[in-house]
Image 1 (cartoon, rainbow, N blue to C red):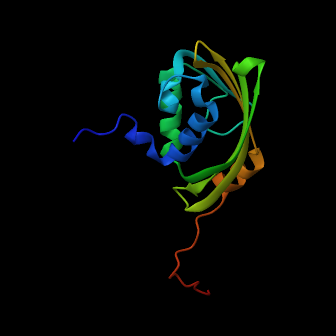
Image 2 (image 1 turned 180 degrees about the vertical axis):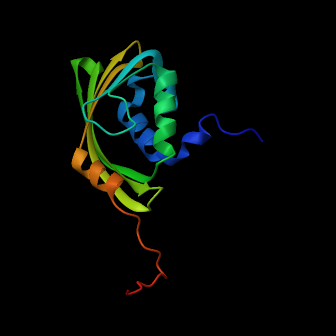
Length: 154
């Protein structure tokens, strides 16, 4: 049986599913990567090491998310609030994501606000805001001790 088209991105599936739900029938395509094009601009207004501030095109966006899923596994995405303006040509979404940082097993919870401009039933521009402190705290936290480990006094 062949692998699903976007199986490598399963650790971010809750996010992709939430976005797809938020955009509904305003865009064409089943998956998040189906609703972006080679001309889509994905802009983030925060600094996270290893994540570019501006990503241009579907291929580069997939590459960036490949790095994301290599480091973070989401269990859920929720608290979705959708605001439409300009006849559905601009959509603002607010949401939360919840998961773990894979290298440390540290819990990751964050809130986002994304402003999405739609042209020709595809995402033309995405501007993202997030709780940078929540990301920093999760990404810089030390690994959780193993459940059965005992601290040794010296």
